[in-house]
Length: 139
Image 1 (tube, rainbow, N blue to C red):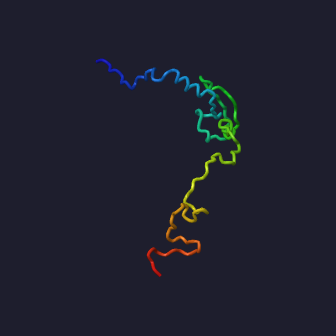
Image 2: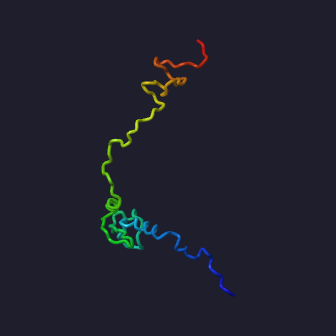
Image 3: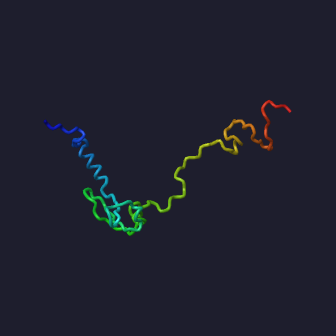
């Protein structure tokens, strides 16, 4: 009895799936990335929210391995180091200078209704405070 060959899915993919230049560009894009590792006893790193008061080692990716970069005493300080805010106080002036678009609200030029030439909706009061009755009704 001869052994059967393994299915094709068991073999690793061919090495020519991605050009080397594309792989190197992807790898180099991560250089300088920081990560935090909690310094706690137990079975390896865990979720950061489980030990918010535990100190953390800050590591930096150099393209080949994670190297020591710094230290943070707790989770709050770690987040300030890893995710710095670019502007502590955002600008109060709007950055969009486009004028507002006209809507269907009440405006000084058109009165109720918002569009020029638009008829008043039945049931709305006019300038005198009177509400129009049903169409075709005679007094």
